Length: 390
Length: 63
Image (cartoon, rainbow over all chains, first blue to last red; front, side):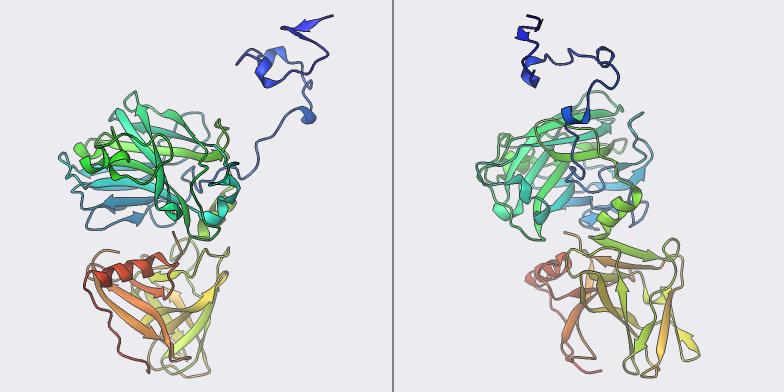
């Protein structure tokens, strides 16, 4: 009888029989492993949207401070200030990426104004909230709950301990926090964090926030005074960010992140790259921008309901998460053409609609009921946004 | 939302009913129209702004 290790060759091997890295690629004959003998990583396994930072509809530079408040930066990634930190950051999409990994963009946080002495309640964060109905397969709160693995590439000139926290808004902010170490200054490092299954939490099956993934940049003593919550527990300020360095303590500091992936299981698979259009459409569920430069310069033709208003419908690329806010840069950035005349509208207003169809209204005096009108984005700074972010 | 100047109720010319909140800011010409919907994060922020003691302007319906 022949053996592989201490098992007869007639007995199928399991992964437990194989020492890590014991079988190199060179030892496997070409085409020896058939499709029936391997399991492909599932598509859309990454619960993070825009983890490769390739989509940035809102712009190319974001000033973030307590006077500007929390704000979305690159698509789906939000800067959050906690209480009133004195730091000012500039957040940009960057082409500084880990070599040879396939990434083209990263999210860069640059300290523009330092805050070397944090008040106890001050903190700054980068966060992505995941829609709850996309998380039901995690079976949170059941005995079958899944373990998760979070992986990402990170780089900073400021070495030391950083903290990432996961939090369930539907479960009284139940949370778990993990420390990761940036060991080498200004060097890309891949971090992999194993997250235990949570058999006691809760994520509602709806379109609200189900899980917040938060990378701390700075944290006052209110968030570092306890013991780091290394297993799922009830919310505790003091257990949130124990050990977190203060990235904001010097204007020379910067922090980069890309390749963010959160997936079911106990190990990190290769980053799941999506085609640009698919990535964009996933982002557009939460934010859709039409601007002067890239997406065309016209809103849909509208119909004058009265002498002071004209109605139209925008069909978005995908169904939006919820009824969106309509935001525009300035009424003076638009030009309304009607009945042989033209001029800036008084205002643009969201009316009804949901899902794919968003109804809007353009107000201006001097219109003729029953006629059509046409409104253009007429300034290089003009933006027309539909925002249903979490 | 920081630096809110005014929040005004917009009435739909079609229904005559409150349609959305129009938000203007002290530091930019940006304008938001926010649906009256608790699932909308800007709506939630307006409720917080009101809780801080601010007032939504309601001029009533009609053009």
